[in-house]
Length: 216
Image (cartoon, rainbow, N blue to C red; front, top):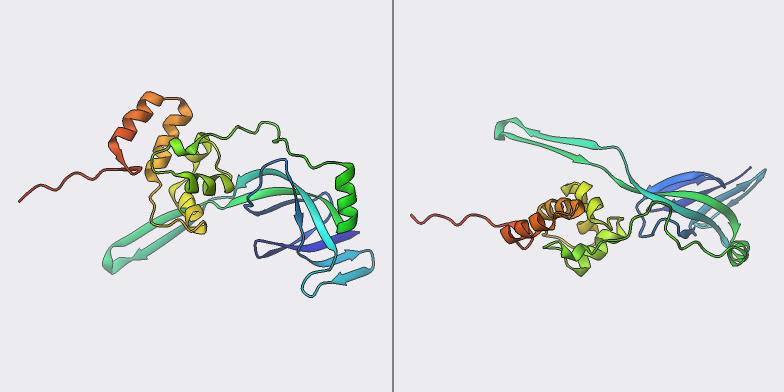
């Protein structure tokens, strides 16, 4: 039996050809093929190749099946004497891969020439929406969201605020509040453009404007 230990996103996985693997979300589209070049160990029958740290000339090739989200993890912060009770939920984003080949890169290249890389979206994939129509989302934010797998109004509408904040933080985009984005995306996904425009009239920079303070 042939298997390998590969690294993706700083984590190690034991994989064999034909395995389905969930890794931290990658900036790829469903239907594409990717190369996992960081192979720490290759085993085939009674023969082993151990990398220092990587095994030279060996890689794993996988096709991208879909982007998914893991189970919700709850965190609770409690400080009784200060009346602090904060409950947060988080669902990690993953990319699901199918390992197609493990072995020498030269052989992988030869196989790729015989079977060209798949570039068509997987069945049922949705066309990307123009996320910059959401007030508060510019080209850089839209690019970060699309790289994380949020490419449509419907996907943004289903996302939670903390997950979107994490995507922005990882992309180096801080001090942004995505709460109003999700509310806009819900209307856009429903096709309620009249309500969408009415909501945007109430927003300022993608957020609801705070009421003016009353003069003393």
